[in-house]
Length: 567
Image 1 (spheres, helix red, strand yellow):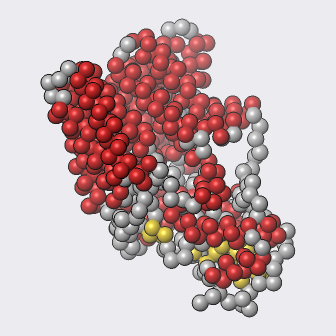
Image 2 (image 1 turned 90 degrees about the vertical axis):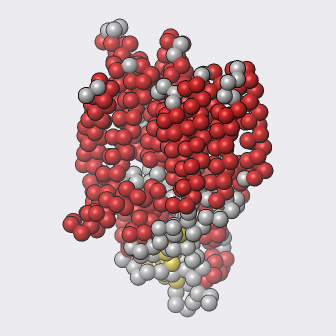
Image 3 (image 1 turned 135 degrees about the horizontal axis):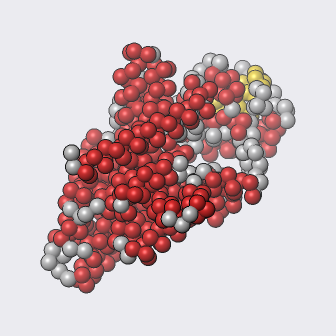
C-alpha cells in the first residue's frame, strides 16, 4: 500500500472514531427528544416529514407539503438530500419498525456526514501543511462551532451535506491541478446547488479561485478550470432531469428550479470558454479574458435570470419585515446580538488570523487559497451569520498549524493555541461576558406539551404562529396555515393578519381559511399582536372555545360550531 493511500485510510478511521464518539455523547445527552423524534430544528422535522411522504407513496418529483397552507405548498428543497436518510429508513423498517428506523436514520446520517467532513478537513490540512497538522485539524473541525451544530443527531436538513460538498471542492483546489481535480470540484459544486441555494456565494468564491489560479498558473490550472466547467454543466444538466420537481417552472431562483439550473449552465460556459481561449496565452492576456468574461457573464445572468440576483425578492415586504429579517441564521452579523455574533464568528476570525500568518510565513499558494476561502466565508457571514458554518470548519487547518507551532514554544502557548481553536468556547465566553435572556421568545410555540396536545385532536386546520408549522406538521395530523417557509406567503400573511387584527377581522380570516383550531402562544417577539395578546390573557371571543391549556403556557381553542367556515 502506498503511503498516501495508507494515510487516507488512517484519516478515515480517525474521522470515524471522532464521529462515533461525539455522536454517542450527543445522542445520550438528548436521547429523550431523539426517541420521540423531536429533532433539533423545525427544518429537520419538515425534512423528516418530506421523507415520510415520499416513502408513503408521494411521487419522487413531488415536493409539495400538502399539510401546509390552504391546499399545499411546493417546497423549495431538493429530493437529493432525502436519498440517504430515506434509504436507511426503507431498508430497516421491515426489521425494526418505522419508528426505530427513523431514529436510526436521524442519528446515523449526521454522523456519516460528520465523519466525512472531519476526514476531508484532515486531507485538506495534509495538502496545505503536511502530515503533522492533519490530526489536530480533524479534532478542531469535529468541534468547530457553529459548524458542529449541523452534525448533532437529528440534523437531517441539508446544510451539513452542503458543508461536506464544499469541503470536497476545497480539497480539489489545494491538490495539484488536473482535469480530474476540476471535474470533482465541479461535481461537488453542482450537487451543492441542487441541494439548495444557501451556499451559492461561497461556491462562487470557489469558482473565482479556480479562475484566478488559471490566470496565474500553467497547464494544470487550465485543466482544472476546464474540468470544473465541464462537470458543472454536465451534472447540472443531468440533475435537471433526475431531480426535476413538479414545481420546476416556479418563477424564482430560491431552490433548484428551471431558472437556477439555467443560470448555472450559462455560468459553466465561462470556465470552458476561458480554458479554450487562453490555451497558449500569457498571464496578462488571460487576466484580460477573465475580466471580460466575468463582466459578460454578469450581464448575461442579469438579463436572462434576474430572479437570481435576489432569490427571495418575491417575498412580500410585510412578510419580509415581520419574519424573514428576524430569522436568526439569516441576519447580518452586525445586526445580531453581540453574544451571538461573537459565538458565530469567533472561530472564523481566529482561523483567518492563523491563516494569514501561515500564508505570510510560507508564501504558499495553497495557504493563500485557503485564506481566500476563509475571507469569502467571513464576507458571507457579514451578510448572513450562517456563513460562519463554513468559516468555522475552513479555519481548522490554519488553527491546527498554530497548535503544532505552539508545541515548540512550551505548555502555556500550546494551551492558548488549543483554547483559541476550541470553537465551543466562543459562545460560552460570549454568554458569560454578555448575559442574555435564558429563554427565547416563542419557545412555548414549539413546546412538546403543545405539540402533544395538538396531536391528540382530530385532524383539522390549525392557525398557529409561524414557528409551530414545521414541528406540528411532522408530529401531528394537523394542517397548518402558516410555516417558516417563504413559498407559503399567503398562509403566513393570513396568520399575521389574524393575530395582529381585531377579533372580528380574525373571525373573517378563520372562516375564509376554514380554520378548525387556533393556538395562542408566545410567538411574536417585538411585534404588536393585539388579538394574540387578548387570547393569552384568556379573553377569547365567543366564536372560540378553549379546549386545552398546557404547562408551557400555550392554549388551544376550537372554532365554535355556530361560526361555520365559509364554503
